[in-house]
Image (cartoon, rainbow, N blue to C red):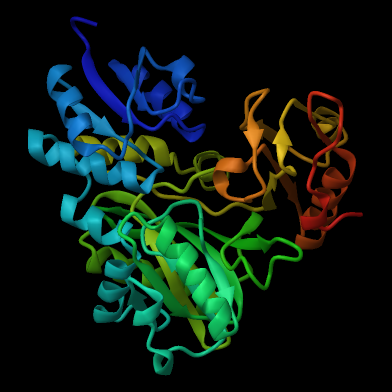
Length: 413
């Protein structure tokens, strides 16, 4: 370690395994910070320190003591903000200012800037109590969510005043700043647009259509079990997606960083829900590299090191989908059937994201994902049929051999 540069990686998520490996390839001694005892990326790091990535002053102290030359997180909003805070205090390179990181991790600030800069988005109002709700500003359906939570936690569609009161109270309890946002609801299908801002301009790497969870269309607005890519967009919508990417980069002064935005495609065009100046979670790092020839993790490292990103994403020929496996509440033991389905050609690759013995609750947020798999084909119909076959054949078992796959949320053959 004596002759190696020190990198602090904030967050031990599965996507950060690739980050840790790439940093070590670049000659860094990698220290992983995570509040968990055994986060997935721990075994790949040189060292693990048990600490919350949200405690920016504690991270700053560790960075000083260990003489860190790099403080980085590539796919966790709040951890990215901590990175920018520490980097500014220590005079280290970072992709954007700490102020920008605050603007994009607070949905209220984000919406305000988007509206000011002409980025198409829905109407909104902020409240710190149920009593603050101005019902004359609310039209139904609407969307309620905390202003500062990850993993789509606390995001719900509401259709009445009573339902709004209940969901606002829930959002206030989940929010670190005890603030909820109520937004107008846009009818249409949801997309994610993966982008990268470079010295050569803002580029769209991939568009994906979210696959809605069956039975959750009413309440869980942002929740999905995966995505289909490329998204079925017309030339006009593809052009608008590119224009919006440029507007976001300009509005938030993103000059050298990966970013993505989520939006609803309505009959009147694209309406942005929110965005993040980072790589998406889950399989984003794998999908972008495999199907857009865009190594987003390498680009993110360059961004955090102050190195100009140089990349030209390419379009894929086949249709693909990512599919997330969720289970009912219980203890995860193992999955059966994925290898067999891969051999039969119904899936091209799969990834296990939970350790044996993990306790999982009923909330279908990203942190409760058990595994994921990728399907490819020559049409949207083909990949939909293959994915339905996989969900029909696999089993998610607990230690007693009871199958806990939550089949009710998936289309099955």
